[in-house]
Image 1 (cartoon, rainbow, N blue to C red):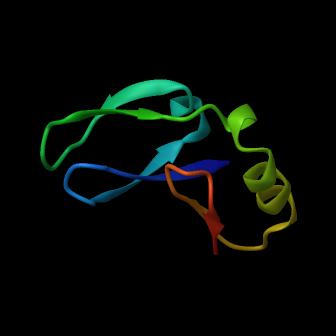
Image 2: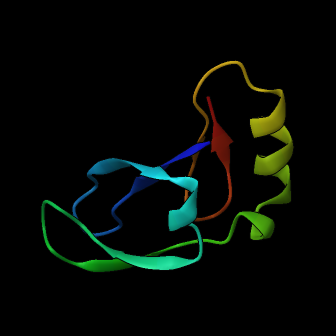
Image 3: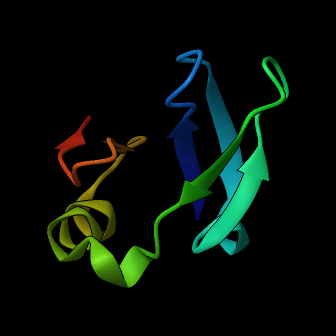
Length: 66
């Protein structure tokens, strides 16, 4: 599974491995550090991801889109 994370500073989106969950990463564009939430903190998103046929986008508030 892959995660799409959006940098809260510059808005750039990055495709990350699921192992990036619950880690701090550095944005490749603006070099700011931000935290990728734990997948367990997003129960609604997890249920959508398991049912999804395409990519799911989750914002910092835990809202899922896709």
